[in-house]
Image (tube, rainbow, N blue to C red):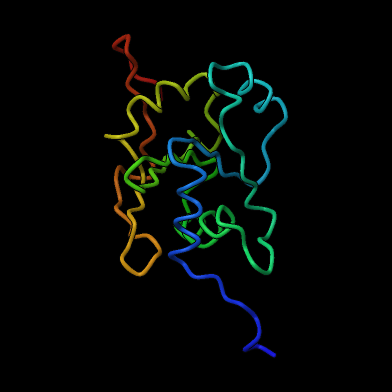
Length: 154
């Protein structure tokens, strides 16, 4: 009965995802330390991040966010946790949130978001067939952050 199973179309999944998450930030992870989440929630805008656990497999018919997370972002094999910013042009800009193998402190997220347009690890652009094409940015090992105060974190 394979022919009866409805297959989700990439273009529909992408458009549904963008319709829901444009202008928003997601944090993709495989489990977060409760202390880290507690600190995140104390930060301005910290409650506005959607947290997506890649440790939970998608359903048989993935939701749009499951499709993007598991089939478009996870295969890039960037370190986790990972910040994903969805812009109005349908792009998803990615930057991992680790330094020396450990998650950065949530207080660094606002500075990281400020420079995300110029300093990203990967950016996904809408592709004609409905998925995304990858543009690679800074090296994975580089996760320094330039602050407004003239000093560098990392």
